[in-house]
Length: 244
Image (cartoon, rainbow, N blue to C red; front, side, top):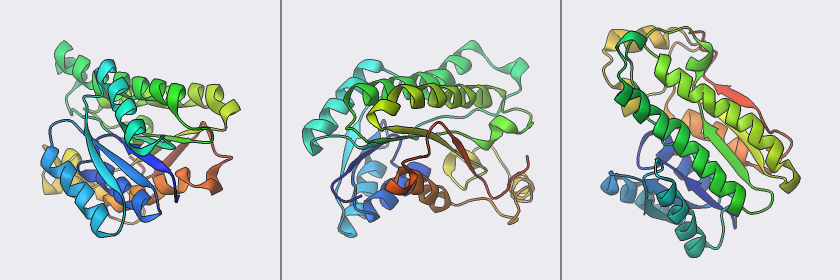
């Protein structure tokens, strides 16, 4: 990935940070997007720089199309172009469908769907020929887990966006894929879960554990590589045979 630039949304911690570090390790310059976690975003960049890589933080609220447009312009101005986009930023609520408020629904969809959509739109307008777009999904879309209805619905929309955009950007040799993790040890995943719940989900994988962010980052990097140039419009389940 030498000479390439990757923009990763929500890269201040968790899977986003792991992706930024992994892509930088493979030679890409990385733009670390964040909204409120400036300290953590700078920390992500420092980790990359200490390993000899190139990284810079960029603040933007991806749920606001105007800020997304500015984000892309700033990254292109600084690095000279964008070759890889990883749409990682997202939020999750674990609430029964009959208890989800309109405000909660709108907030999840504004980030998980609207944010991804307008990042993809900017990529479609500005990404370099032969680029890579990876949308982070979830294995919950094919599971039947209670309380994940709003989150699963938002990520299901991302999967369909991926499929359509892959066709639209094919003439420019830009691939578009979804990487869908299973349970992964992040702050987002552990929120409102006790150890018994985590252990139960770990038992649903073939390896009797939940993933660590590096597990997912390596799959994202694989999809971003030149070897994956013929893989597009796909959903890759990075979940250790999770059978939720």
